[in-house]
Length: 251
Image (cartoon, rainbow, N blue to C red; front, side, top):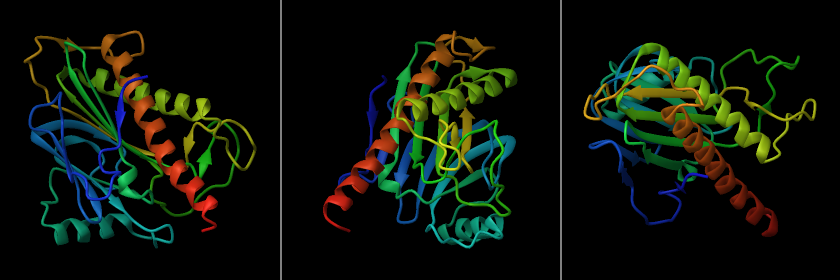
């Protein structure tokens, strides 16, 4: 499994993580959110609650909200927060999570044809399995597995979609290997009910390669799968360790 870090887990530790594979890319732990700042505008495809879809991004934020967050209008709430934090609305993708941000896990790899950065916040309290009938949510709830995936390299649009598919497969594999199940039916979970992903691609030609595929049988897709698997696993284990300790302490 790829090497994974939880850079903000230690109290009093660093508040900023600088990528070792994408020059100028920085992940910063703020009081209420994680800020992923790109060194230049990046092509993006995402399912972010704010600024999702296809476009160009300068930054992505992953906002911490409480489990009882009143989520009738998350887009408005995110806009208000971005304004409060002083970030331009344009070129920003916004995610929401009820996972304490110190459990964010980071994994990176330089494949020789791309630099890949992955940050995940994950918990499995609302784990769910795709492909079966289950309860339907009538309002947005903050995503429980949020993936921020950055690639310093050149990808075609179809390869970007392929990368999202590979990342999703890796997330499902991590949940299966950890034995996480859907509480409604006891079947292996494939995600949670409101997962989200942001994929940002620099478009840089410094590696001298253009990726047209990103499936698991490619160098790029293989690395994406390893990094997402490691980061999902790392964040879930970090959360679980705190929960186990709390039970031992009778909290």
